[in-house]
Length: 70
Image (cartoon, rainbow, N blue to C red):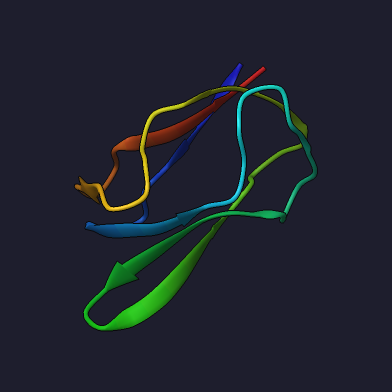
């Protein structure tokens, strides 16, 4: 099991995955907005999404767990 974390604090503007989705390494899974810029968060490994821990509109801190993979 691995976790995808927020590289910096910001607002979640697009969650592109849901539990059960199969993803590949380097797929965009979440878009964060920080300092008026959009920052894509990509998968660090391939796997299946077990849990999404954020929603559109949420504000997250740096190093917050966004997605859990299995």
